Image (cartoon, rainbow, N blue to C red):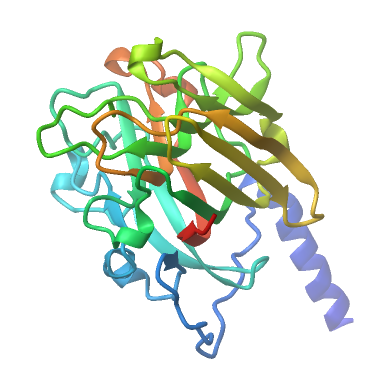
Length: 303
């Protein structure tokens, strides 16, 4: 009888709690999780959330976060953290973005967008930055949140971009490749793979692939991307859903100009970089988000 009363009470509490009821996060493992030996170019979460930035830089990456933007100035917020993921059964990186507070690293001249990203750059080992004629492999896992909000403006979750030279004259103002989550004018939503040609070829967006964004939301997927860093280079990517192995997006090896005049090298970026419109006009359409990433790998491949 007592068991019946207890069960009834639990069911009544769940039924009456409405939208406030939350399924608890998967518990942290009680024992330390063995970490595989790290190879150069790999970045894997290790569970020490407070030391996340130190881990990122120790692995040859760098970060651009709005930790002290606006209201965060008085109480800095760590925008890249770690948590245990019950589906992958490992620690992962959580990229936080706050629509009412965050901006683009506090830069006073940029008032219509916000950014929280990691990248390789000029401080990374040579093996993690593509030079002219080289072949690069980028591999990672990511999970876009359920219910993620988008607009008709950009929301990049991955970029490939050139590194500027010391004189600041390289053709690197625009990314070469972006993965962009976007709402179309008809209300449908897509994850788009966009290529931008060199400036002397006219620039502009060229859409290499488009996939239904709803297929990605709330799902862990794995991306494998290859580029040949050359004016006569190539680009390819495949993204598969881990739950069932289904390929959600594919760009077969495609001849493209994957080098930019004057650049010091080609590098990847990941996270969230989104527009909220002039004077915050799009903020009502957006919300705080947490994007999850895991198991980054950057390396050079032989011919």
